[in-house]
Structure formats: C-alpha cells, structure tokens
Image (cartoon, rainbow, N blue to C red; front, side):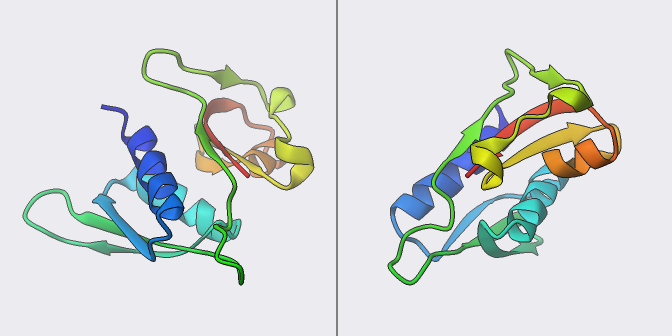
Length: 129
C-alpha cells in the first residue's frame, strides 16, 4: 500500500470534513512530510504517539478565519507503479511559487526550493497548494 498517498488522502478528507485533527499510522517518511507541511504553513502541528505496533501520528489541520483549509489541493505525483524522477534543473514551480513540491532526494525529504538550492534531483512525492 502507498503510505504517502494514504497520508495525503487522510489529510485531504479530514480538511473537507472540517476536522481539527486526523490520526494515521506513523512512519519516518510521513513525519518528514508533516514537518515540511508545517514549515510551509499548510498544517498547524503534529504529534507522535507510541503504541504496541508502529505508533500513531496525529496531524492538526490549519484553517483560515472563514474556515477554509490552509491548502487547496494535495496531489500525489509519484506512485508505486510509476515513479517520477527529475533533475535539479527540472524542479517544478507550483502555482507561481504559492505552492510547494515535496521531493525525496539522497539527502532526505525536502521541498523543491531546497533541492534547487542544494542542486539535487530526486523523486517527486507530491505537490501542495
């Protein structure tokens, strides 16, 4: 199962239902993506909780004053059946810079802007705007 796709779908569905938080199984990749979403202002925070299995990650969603989510769309780009790899010169600019590309590089998971500054290519995980 695609864990990143499941995470993005859980967050997208919770925001459409106007939920304050959403729980999902924890993993290091999901934690790194959540850190980027917080850094870019798309979600409020997250917490990790231990349990007898792999742990639970709780993501707290962010809304504006009118109750609209902080993001318009979360879209998965690379899937287990079709991986999408790009060079550092091909990193997409999402919505004229208002969105963000999240990538997996050999230096870890980072935004497209950080990958361009570090001159790194890699796998495009998702686009957020």
